[in-house]
Image 1 (cartoon, one colour):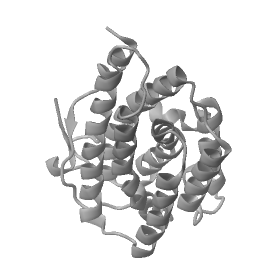
Image 2 (tube, one colour; image 1 turned 180 degrees about the vertical axis):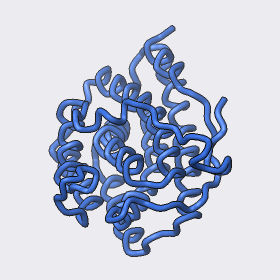
Image 3 (tube, rainbow, N blue to C red; image 1 turned 135 degrees about the vertical axis):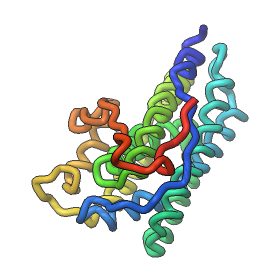
Image 4 (cartoon, helix red, strand yellow; image 1 turned 30 degrees about the vertical axis):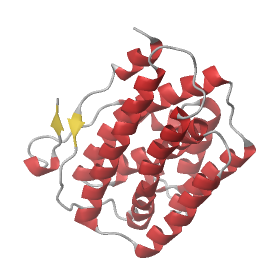
Length: 239
């Protein structure tokens, strides 16, 4: 099996479902609405991959199949996040501001797969733990499922960038920092790190420069709701 298809084989099939509205960690609400507003980046990532498929790709088996698989995941992620929005509603101001951020990513001149790689590694991998540690049961569960997909996406897109000799740019670094800073701008610096603005910005910096974030080691442990915590409507279907 090729290295690309080996990564694809790690995926687990799952289907998002509609969820009930639960309680978010007090103090995280405005930040979570901003993070959810950035769901507008999910389908553009799919578009970035399509643009990449139309360019020169590494001459290695499994590349096209891997990118097509990742494209399909983006539709699923978008649907799952829409279910969260259906339950919680939106912050209209955050939605408008997120559209401006989206436009900046679309207009960035870098290779589309490089843009997808930087977005997933140093922005999405901040938003997903934010969902998991400050959201309700439905949001936590969805974030855990999306995270498993994104781990494979980051690996595949990183391999494509490596094989094509693509490296990040000052522009993409600036853009990812501005994106994360906007999401967490309303947080202060309390002792609770999940509500600490500087903590999340530092995690994005670490993910960007090192490809890992020591402050998010808790996300390596799968945390699924117990049967008494949620009704079946909040639990996705697997397999």
